[in-house]
Image (cartoon, rainbow, N blue to C red; front, side, top):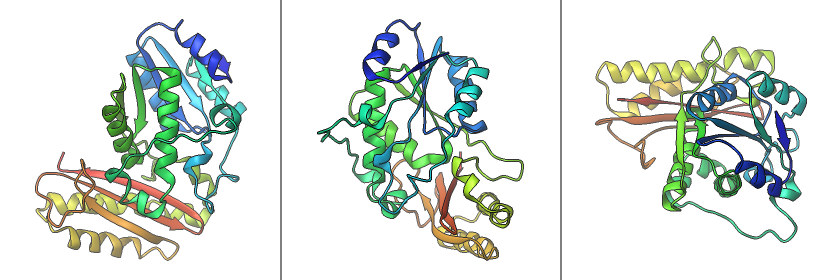
Length: 278
């Protein structure tokens, strides 16, 4: 396994790789969800590149950049066990050198949901994704469905900017009790961790209500909120039932919908989602 820390070296190595090239961008502190993306990339490509980079520009001023969990040696051991060929591990100075002043922004898809709660977040996401895509030049890039809005935004960016790659979205990987795997789960104390699976339970409730023929989104959101509020440690930031292509809120589910949410436990913010009508 080769660890590359500079953009010029990554570009040189890239053109020696066998095609097609799969790419898994991560912020490190890897878990089984990340590894499922690596395995998918290995199954579908002759070469695989994984990046580890905690991107500062997608964190707001009051968010957890300084505390974001990091353990490079652990991550590298996990990736080596998976047979990963290339790990791109750049520094902040490498990605945002002095004088850096160019940004990639998307518009409509970034305004609701996470964009409403974190107004500068997606500018950082789209910028770093565009930079990494330009550096690695992947054939296929792999993202998790847990970050559904992020995946949608990146797919739109790649299409709009005529990027020659396919963005592949893979199913959310969950703990045995249903909690979506996330690097931020380590922030939860034991009581919060015991309570957190209520997010998934509320999504299953929405799925059941839809299967029973209920299409009124206000009523579905209300029942989901009532269930979550039975957990006193959970504080709902939003519950959305939206068009899965545009993220516009729906009053009635006609064909399909993306049900998504953000719930805070203390200072820890968890997100999850599920598609209805697929």
